[in-house]
Image (cartoon, rainbow, N blue to C red; front, side, top):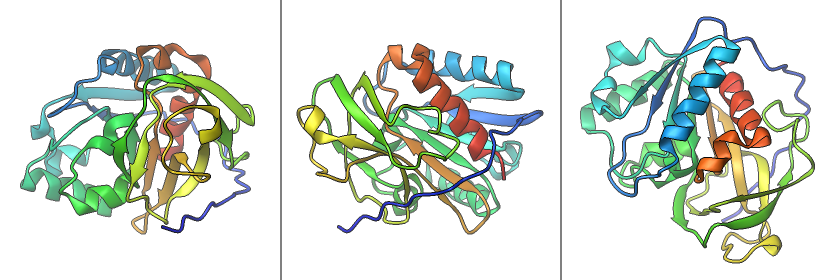
Length: 235
């Protein structure tokens, strides 16, 4: 598959998210990440520090059109498997098509394999992963607000996903250097964070980090989360 890197000269500043509402969804129907509570806590703390309110749930009944319209951003935090039924899927599609925003963290890509629209929205599906290890991540969109705080080569430890069905519409932010660790399968172009602006005016954002509990207290990763949340709500 051809994959296109996109570089940007963004001048958008990280916004104030006063009075914004964020839904953190963490239902699992497969592997359960022990880091989910740490992720929830981190996002709640970021909300308190940055003026957005956080509702967390693993109850898919929250995915109704009436309820979703309350939220400026829906985060899938380490979801796995088939987490929404058909009616809930339709409600979420309608939310996004009406200008909603989405942010997938780590195993959000290990979710809803039979729902083609979701795969398009997330930007890829999980293929497999090697053992947890240190790797080098390269910033390719240096001026984008979600990654502009990072060193050009970011060395960190996490569970590094290999992906399938990578969407060529993705605007790549970070690349994983497969020469720096063992077990990569995406080659020289191995995206690990990306976004796309939707025709509806909304944002779809994804980051592949966040498997480990330590991720959510790691200053650079935590700041990446903060900036990604604020960026996804700026429209």
